Image (cartoon, rainbow, N blue to C red; front, top):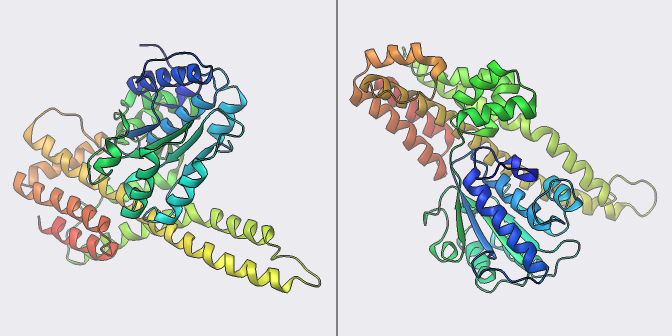
Length: 399
């Protein structure tokens, strides 16, 4: 297996996927050049699956860059590669759901745009991140395009799995599947050291505790606030001594998620509002600007509505990371109590894990783990996060 070069180095620990996608990109270049290729060498629809942090969206952007590459290899240096990776290529459309779902109206507009011929590149590429958030109507709109694809249009769908709950069976059957794996800790640490300049000891620690999530590893390695939030979450299992600790711990989880979401959204939201007002003339002065100001304010209200939906999604995603950390703690207790010898999710909390394994029965630990998983499921079903978290923490204390 060849060592990744060019844009393919963005994919961490995904050599099998790189092999598949780079081979398809080379076939696509031959199609553009009018050369013969094997019938299955390149296809118009792809489904990239893998656990959170495995790099699904990175793989999609990397493949898109290789398709727009002037050499057809994903060199990383040509304008096609650079603009695609920067998100500014005119023929690469990226759909990132800012709310909790992707609407049918949004998908219909995207399908219409994708039917056009490429303008600056060789392919029209549509990347749909979180394709599992497609509504039923949006899935049907996408299905029509996937069934009868326009020439030189490629759809890249990213989802946690190819299970029918994530991607409809009809869409899945028309896509070529590229599964991504959880990157090994050694590969993640190496990227943190070489690309982000993180000192080796911290890089190795972040890679060991990130649960295979490259973005989480980078954040833990470079952001003190993220490290503090993780430490707060992992104090919960052994910190539930009194009844009122239930509500204190639940509040800490919710507040941390809200703070993280607010920190991520604040600067972006204000910049978007300012740019929209400027584009619509809402900040103008002089005669004849009253109509522009009214139109701008109406547009800003619509933008703020979308931003609120995005903030809700960001808060839930951040809370989910905390719940995954909690689930990892209880999983580690089971690993320790059963003496299985499996690698711990939180090796830096081995002392606390050993204490819990000595104090809790396997049955009570399983009940705690199931409570965390049920909380994740409840929030996914739009149960109010505070109610779901308080119910979970009550079970964590009782065991």
